[in-house]
Length: 254
Image 1 (cartoon, rainbow, N blue to C red):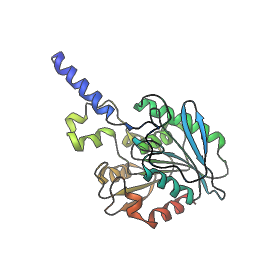
Image 2 (tube, rainbow, N blue to C red):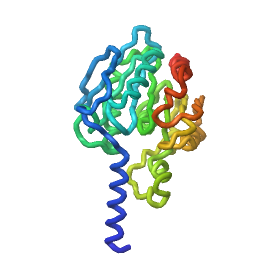
Image 3 (cartoon, rainbow, N blue to C red):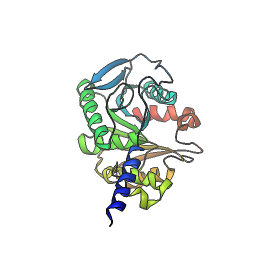
Image 4 (tube, rainbow, N blue to C red):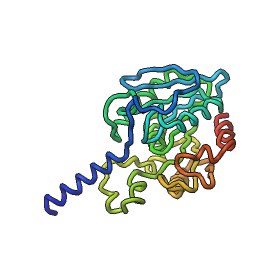
């Protein structure tokens, strides 16, 4: 292949990789978390702990690829739902997001998640379930932790996918999507997750198609439930689901 064509392919692949992250720095915020919480610094990462008096479980939440802990407001609403379900909740910003310095990459967000996971494990009550929850790209990060680092008692995956190129392919086609170097290969890792796995996905999701969530579910040997939210898109799932979203999380955390 001529060197010029190789250069174009490498450059396009780097562009697609970078588009995997839509991180916003701290000054860009849309809400202040209205729940009592503590701030921690793990390395250079900002970490929140939202305690629950009558805790049913410890939940480490991995957010999606856009915004930061304080943006968008829907992120705070999801955190509140987990808190009200009975979780002592931990969440964090990857490098390059919010107050966490740096630039995100696939390897980088795995390293960030590992560091926070180690920290949370040392502070978690061993007498209650330890649960990982990831949304969208955070689902791939949570699956990585569950498969490669340490098995939780439950893995919850919301609006997530089989792999990053599979998501990209819906916009660019398979051939162009294959140029990505970022993989986030949950379809390969899900078989190594030895705990129960619960899924949530909206049928009208145009960012991560519902079909990718169903495919990942079919590949999971320990999948135990798939919550389908009819008519829900990628960012309004919890609102479209209404009370069912809260009720389902409360039931899973028992």
